[in-house]
Length: 405
Image 1: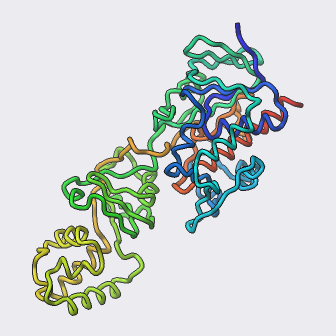
Image 2: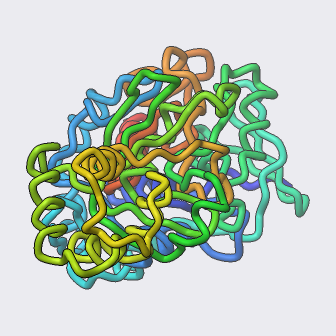
């Protein structure tokens, strides 16, 4: 026997829960959330290293890429601070403009959402395997054999990465079966694989700097922030934000240029090196550079310059100091791949031109697409989650208006 609901939401993540909260708060009585994991909101708890970086103070439509123009949705959503304060959750902003819950714990965000959608029905451990239009209704079937109908459906099943959070892209097949144009998902916001031999000695080092992605000899994009080295990757938020510029079939043509001293001109850096050489003339090159950088990093820079770390620094010529300065501001690493296993999000999704201003499919009335299932993506810093809140809110509000009219 099929159960009927006014609104069924496929996926209990950030956008799905936001849609449910919005619809319920407007008076929709029969709302069902179908979640394939044992609980809703699991991915929310992992965001921002468990603190939930839920938005960014300087966010605008220009921060987003993809085939859908997010301007209208962001305007309809309004202030994320107001949205969460209406749920009893207060926020704070750090020095980089990242917005967090005041408690600095992601649990507070999930609690705020779940406390305000208690009137919705949650069914977890339910994997949706069919989604079909039948006359004026949507018919949904799950792997466990349950069947439902609904007048409106919000597809909020996430992207194609992080399967441990229920988002492996398998749900997108439901849309493809309806001949809905879907751009294949690809991982973004993840570390870049590079030369293990070179990285081994840099493992664990963190340094403030800038990193530029090059395609052959053409600079693609530069980001500034903390750069982290592991035994196989170059990582950090600034590196994550370069991933979307890389064409997967051209991986071998890219490399990274790290500037360890972006705040200094070449002449200023040379002056510092010259001073270090003068005041530490009795030491070797490694110790000469330790006044500017960690020793392991100094050894790697010297090796790239083919200068022995134990060479007396007094023997360095001015040309050698220039070589060191140039390497410090153009420290090259080959791009050998994308560490997709650690991707925080995916690009791709339902093509923007088939969605209306409320994220409803033009060819399928009363079916809406939100969050990572839309072809919208953005850099690290709360932008992805803001899109989840905004898209879920707008779809949920429009559904509620139509249901209650």
